[in-house]
Every structure is written in structure tokens, then in C-alpha cells.
Length: 187
Ligand code: IMP
Image 1: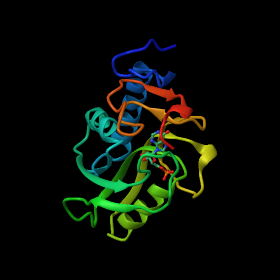
Image 2: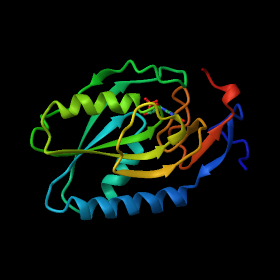
Image 3: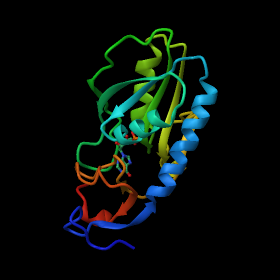
Image 4: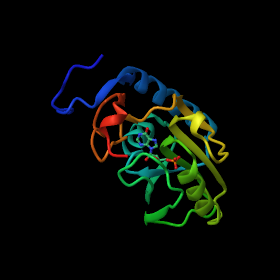
């Protein structure tokens, strides 16, 4: 259970879903697997702003082979919680990815609409390979079929915040992933 904290003055957080410790262990496991799978391939992590920024930073440090990182920003929800499927690129990659082994790093795959659009855009640029590493997945909400090679945790159909994920730009800095009182956030 959570006690009221300065990070949550309105008491919107309900409970810890994934602890700091469990996040750390899982990110290390993913880093180990990626290091083995991409040995000699000099992968490029494409982190999706803003939600994946903390996960991507920790994952990058858990990867022990040469590896670079770039960032994309796309619009998804606005301040509500339903994906519209209308996606815009707000910030594109700094460099071409033709011939690169690209691993998209996403915070959470919910309906899959955002990622589906992003993968389409990246695939058209001719990467040598294109895979996804998502910290969280909500399988019950999936509307489009997306093959995620790496998934940190499958979670129930609840709105979650922390470790990069936000509710209306709040709570990204929490060290754990928490559920929120969904009646108290903007829909
Ligand atoms: P999708 O297009 O429905 O898969 O939505 C993906 C995006 O919606 C993620 O990258 C997040 O930015 C956001 N999102 C989906 N579920 C949650 C959640 O539970 N908490 C915070 N953001 C979420």
C-alpha cells in the first residue's frame, strides 16, 4: 500500500504494481539477452519519447555490447487514456537507419496502434532488422497484432504510471510502476 507522498499530493496513486527491485532485475535480464542476441551487430536502440526514456537509459546501461541510441517523439494519447490511432511524428531520428539492426524501445504496448504506425515508418527506411523491446504490455487491450521480441512484464488492463509513464505529465519520476485511481485522472 502507498502512503500519501509529496509526489502524489492528491492521493491518485493506488498501489505498487512493479517494485523498483523487480524493475531493476528484469531490465538487467533484458540487457543480458539483448547483448547475447545482438553480439557483433552494433544495434541501434530507438527510444520512444517521453515514456520510454527511463527504461531506455537503464536498458542501455544493462547492455554490454557496443550499442547506440536515438530518439523519436510521436503523439499518442494527449491527456486522455484511449489511443486514437492517429499518430504524428513530432521528432524524427537524427540519422538514417538503412542497414542497421534497430530495436525500438517502448514503455508500454496497449492497443498497439502507436507502435504499429511507428514500425511501418521505420520498416520503410530499410533497416537490416527491426524488433521491439517493450517494458510493459497489456495483452487484453491489443487491437493490432505486433510481435514484440522482448517484453518486460505483461500487466492487467489498468492505467499505470511511474518509471517514465505519466498521467497528464505527472509521475514519470517514480522509481516503481503504480496503478492509479482511474476515476481521478483526465480521460
Ligand atoms: P497504444 O497505441 O494504445 O498501444 O498506446 C501506447 C502509448 O499510450 C504508450 O506509449 C503510452 O505512452 C500510452 N499508454 C498506454 N497505456 C498507458 C498506461 O497505462 N499508462 C500511461 N501511458 C499509457
